[in-house]
Length: 176
Image (cartoon, rainbow, N blue to C red):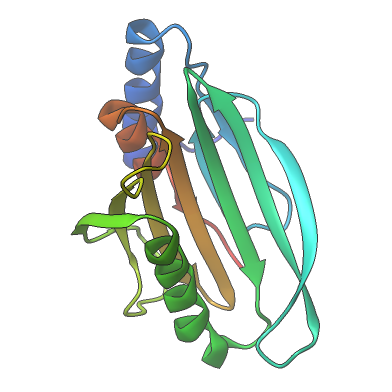
């Protein structure tokens, strides 16, 4: 049986292969967490966590995370299915605002993913530790599809732009 492969996916796999050759500490692999509605490349084997959290209407919601550590950094995908598309813009904005409360915001950039639901908070941004805190660089991408809200994070002591580019550009949104 032949599996069709898209041009963006081939490019992401080639880039990941090239990155693996340049960075032996990063072992890129395609991951499709169950229930996430997304596939992406992780630089290590992620572990999955789930935690209940009050949702917008007060009912409990399951916040899911897949994360791993490689080459001195942590890579994670967090997602939640809000079950109500009208709640998505506010939830995505809260994700962005929360990071800005914890760290010093830096450069922001658009995020272009095929199939995402356009919401104002969609985008990627750099963050750094506040003065006096531990050295930390964070890259964040926030996006949505349907009733799902997603957050990608790369947390390192020094930026790894190439690894971030592979991580974020590998995202393929699937059916909800």
